[in-house]
Length: 208
Image (cartoon, rainbow, N blue to C red; front, side, top):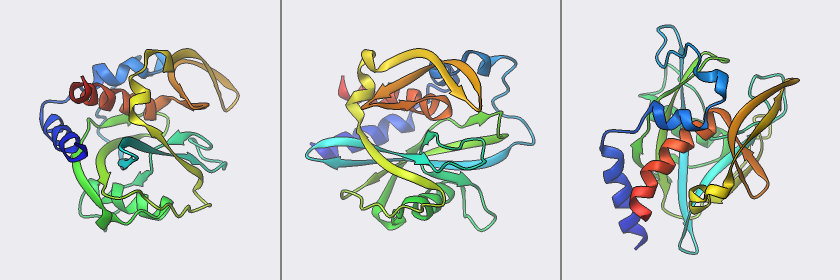
């Protein structure tokens, strides 16, 4: 059954993607004012949506970024980072960064598709999400310079309407009104929630 779900997910990811209008469902209100999804001089980055099964339940992997002086300090995110000239492509970026941040062996990850890129104005990054499936339960090795902790969440929790909230998030001393996911006492908002919103819509087609 597990393999069937992954194969169905592969097929869904080959179809035209929902794109910005699904991402926008979880966007801060001000994010979409004069929003350009593909600015010419944006930097490129890749993130990995890493799935695995545990006790026949499909889980998604998230990290909490280390507290530092960075724009995304302390936020919940997917493992990922900037494209390097040595990367073959942006998928390679996602896999390399996941290895550097949480110790995931890229050879243990089956790439099953990609999602719509998402431009993040505050950091001037165009982020390209890769969806990967870890064939065994991952063993995380955390790079403490970049990641405070790693945790996994059952995918089905994102299908529950009661886990979608709206309120003020305090970021760098400012209150931002935004939708967010609140799951197992974790607040998932911003770019991570926007990317997740598209993936949840695609996944619902499999579980319905």
